Image 1 (cartoon, helix red, strand yellow):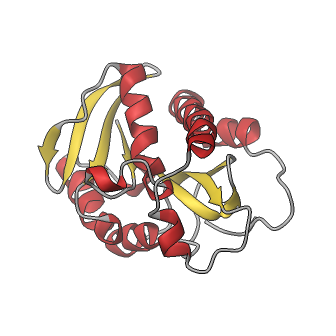
Image 2 (cartoon, rainbow, N blue to C red; image 1 turned 90 degrees about the vertical axis):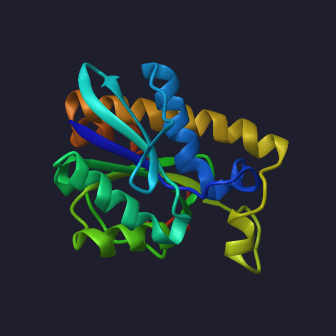
Length: 197
């Protein structure tokens, strides 16, 4: 069994912000697998089903982004899973807008939700899919930027990115992280943090 968690903030005011791309990617996976992510479990909404022939749990923490690790730790405990069974989807301002990156492990790279997950689990050894939301112009406050609703053009690009992220997750579940990294980790423009989480 795999636990697949999308990071984001609960509440309609956050739904269409860059910071909620993890939630939106889980929604896409739920649609593909016919899974309802509606059951309160610990501090998250969760749903069980199958993806790529494998048993999975999809989850969206209800803790607010900066406390995501509490929900992830509780879910791993409930299903008697290890960090190696965890896959996290989240937005990343260090990655060019519209691109995704698959990683087997890594640091939080300044992402507060990931800092919380790594802190709660005491390890960086879990796979993740990063969804790039790097602004294409100088931004004074990145926190404000990622919490502002996306414009129409951004939403269209985000939809494509979310589909790619879901494709990557399906491949990870079926064939492993290496296969997904080979297929989805394309070279991207300079300025991206390649060494990041």
